Length: 324
Image 1: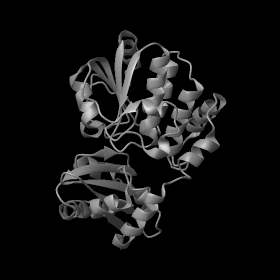
Image 2: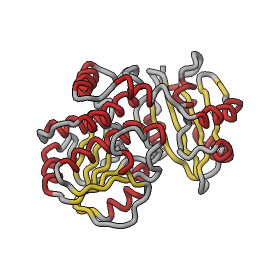
Image 3: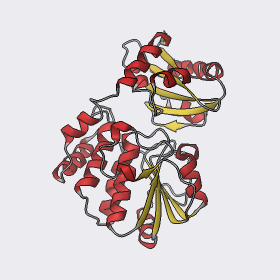
Image 4: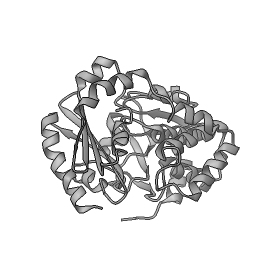
């Protein structure tokens, strides 16, 4: 199994392809949208025939990223020379659009920064040390000698800002800031991106928190909450976002690990994990069929909320007992 990023193989596949499908993960965040549009816009600028798709479409808060209107929320037709899946650690994350792409593409590039990546696809650009998938896209464009337009710079900086929580997470390093500086020099506005992402939220998320916060429980370092489907429907949210609740909860002084259970249609539960340094929730998510980073990960489970809590909470307590 090849462990090093296959830069030349990826460049050759992109050069040879005429029709390309770019996908990212369900419930997309800023890094998913930024990395997808960063590569898709660059490919279009070089005459490639490109389609971009994510099952859930683009969250309203990320609609400011240039090219976001080109992302489809469903895909059921077409054949492609190449599929590029970005920021998606496993096959379940790429959703129906990604699954269709895998079946109807000649080759597939797996571009990701999650250490739990299952290495699906034919060509791997997997860099666990990258702080965000957009960093890998940035390096791929540099490897191929392609210029970065202002629109692409905005997309890539959006991914950096959101995945580093405004350059505050421990993985942020000097190169992260060097890339951000370069993207700003190419026309991306850091202040505008911060205002549109970290400093902005729809009122429906506030309404959702009002309904959900009474469910918050803290037990010996483990803090968790539950979002029911009826709560999401009641406030009229059209995306699968929890409004950043799982990240908010881990900031509680007494908390070591936070968990948010979110009920989904079709008898499924999405589970988000966050941890303070010294605790590893990536291994927990991987054990449950998901993935992510040491301090931020998630998974989706079949069954009811009660079944998900019964499965996850004992394992989360083990993470706390083993960490620190």
